[in-house]
Amino acid sequence: MKQILATTIISFGVIALLAVGGYWFIQREAAKGEVQAPEVQPTEQTLEIVDTPFSVDMDEKKLQDHLHEMSHSKVYAADKWGQVRLITPTNISELQAIVETGDFEKESFYLSTLEAWQKGDFSNAVEVHNTIWSWHGGTVGKATRLMTPEEEKTYLQRNS
Image (tube, rainbow, N blue to C red; front, side, top):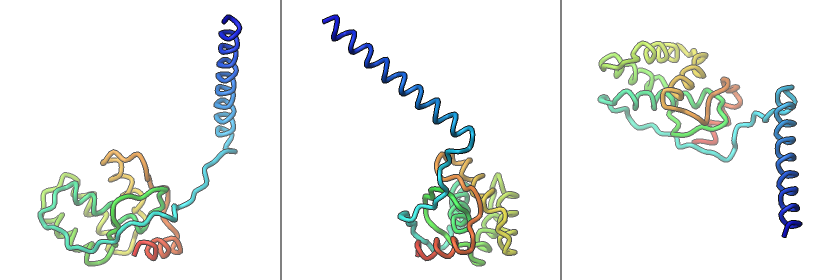
């Protein structure tokens, strides 16, 4: 019985040492920058493109959802959830009218976003995506950069 107990304790000790050593090795290599996850856009995931009219009496969360969905066609994120709502002149002007006539806490954020997009300037899309993502408690799918024109084309083809 003592021999079984000693063997069990030694086995658990060896396993614990291997686990700690493996963890330490991975942390050390990651700190050097040698271990990096590849930046690959998932190819299996598809989102539904929607083009339904906006509700003029939408609440602030729904407005944020629509802007977040619109940003999907411009930003790279390892995961994207929700729907795809294209950034079109019609969608932009409809949302601008809703923001201008509504009472929204973050009105200036929405208007500056939509005004830039109306001019064809999407350089703020990562910031817009991640700001709304964080307001909604995002943990997966943070945007890391703008997509290239080729990635945008592929994204739209895959999701239409």
